[in-house]
Length: 532
Image 1 (cartoon, rainbow, N blue to C red):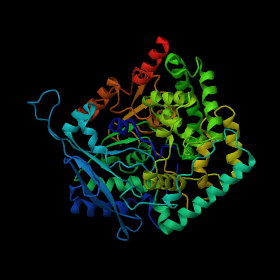
Image 2: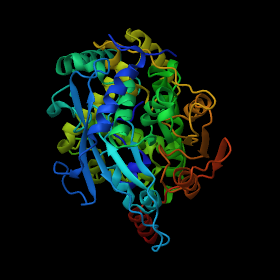
Image 3: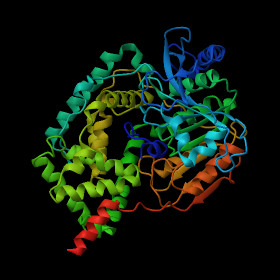
Image 4: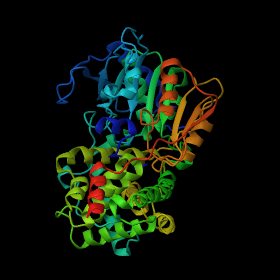
């Protein structure tokens, strides 16, 4: 699923089937996990000052936990996962005289694959999270391969940002051959840089690592929240270790059907983004008084295509071409609070001011190493997790057909995942995510009905497979990750579950959160225009 360099609504608040058998191991590597977890429980985590993470509040602590690179050899090579924590405050934000009892650790993963959760504990400063932060130690971590946890790399970060670049909606045969060659080179780079370790970056190992982290934290039962891709290996954890689960929240659940991992999930994602792209354009058209990009969705599309053509002829600031434009507007498909800034940047660019667009879309060179690492982990995990077509003609056939009705993200998604066609590490067979009656404590699934990055059918499938789960749906909304966001109904269900263990019966629905308002600056511009 294409979400490597983005983040869930949780992060956004801070910033504005078959059993798989490891080579030479036992099914699912559970005996190796037992050994690693017992060792981690004995050693614990020595939390202290976050010396290598600058500019953090003093309340956040950092530590490390060792996990086996290969669970078939639990006493072999170990890697360290970077872990962060903010202790439960015990302070009720609505009653300063009441001391809130601690309920344990709440571990969070923001998805990706490839996203860091190290900064998650700071979410406790946000009003929507204060009640949860009063009762739980908020725990984040970098999964294996990410950031400070045995980081994976597939190419020199100095060459990672390739811009300005084209983004053809219907690529020529010449362009396709160029991208195939680039995908083959990238797959070779991953194999050469990681060596034999490459096969061990996968979702099953992420689930196993989670159990070792639980033990290191001293928790008999895991309380976990996963967003986006984090819901998938969270579901693997629930299948492998149901007796170790206390409470689990699956926010923006992806489809865990083994047949979907990951080629077909990406096709479904590309199709869903077309509808969300339409939602954005309709919103812009509704605010034509502000943005002057067109009074209909089709007119807004024509404005966007005009910008594409201008950028192809002359990149903005020498940095922003059609691919950078597309990537910036793809983010608007994830989070509707991005809509005003994207609309204003497009409007300003077409009026002759490229600065807002450059500020949003120019590749951040200072973040190249982080972005390259995230992309490497994303690619490795998805390629390792399951079978992929190895003949480009299959990709070409399926996506040429899809691009006729869903052109916005289709080919961009192909290029992101195409290295999997030429992957040089062994593939896994995806685990059949499924729990029977009474095996798993009640769990909570949160989903926005129009989520493009994790289409709603995935939440329905997760709900069917995890017996006893409850699905809460935000109707007619599409933000990717809704826990702790702007919808008080959703947050009420989240708090009731995490703080009291209370859930609705099987399913519940929430009305959508309000649509974003046009940026104040854009509103003032519109008023000034009318005055003239």
